[in-house]
Length: 308
Image (cartoon, rainbow, N blue to C red; front, side, top):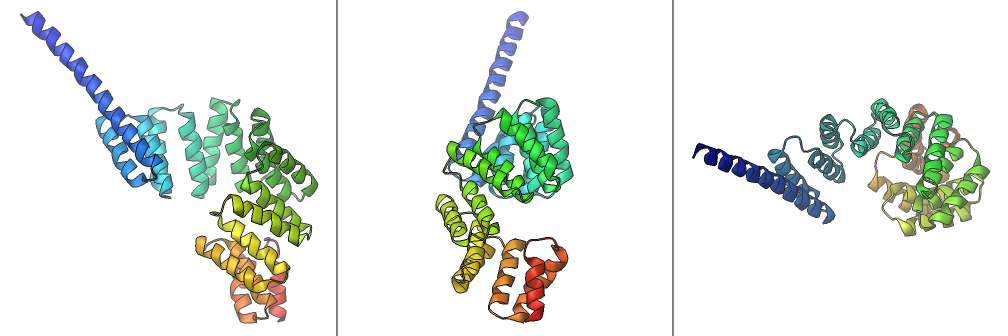
């Protein structure tokens, strides 16, 4: 009789464990469904229920972090990603996403630690070198950034984004011809990549091909109208095409989307220089000349504003 009771209890325990596995899995799936429906707040609730059932459920922490990112809750996302990594130290995707989030949160050296960790885990995965490249870019180490992006591109030659990143570094280094070659390669793979057309517009602007620059950024906007820097670049090109009032509308729209973008503030200062408003021009350009002294066009138009 005692033996039978023991067997029964063991069977019930196994069923109970299976039930908990099923429950936490269902909550995870419900959270995923809400995330697909673009309802991250509800998704977070379901993921939290899964975590209540299993406090070591690494995937639930990871997915919860992705929902926080949808809400631009960077600190919360970092905490959840760190928890998932604590549970699974080799959780490659969680380390990658945490590194990206650290970059977005301005924590560049923590992102570098995650990039180094990824390279140690798998140096044959392009994401390891891609994150390294992004970190070096933020740290203004362009030669190392270029080398990292080229490694990533060699590992994933059909990834057009990597070619655009490589072209971006070449652009920063004023190697415009080489940058354009990379953009042509990227366009063969994915002609609908908006950042490709935006970067091409920036190169054309540097080459003083203002109408062609405008055409390229309008192509970028037609593919993605959610990026404030596309609007800002269009405003800049219109300024140099002497369409100042239309330019101001685009610059203001960019500032409304991202009020902290110093390039948009610079462009508004340039607008006021071009329209002869010294006080307004200096209100924008004085701080930029102090805080971003190496930004293109800032010193030139700050001096012009002073001379008005």
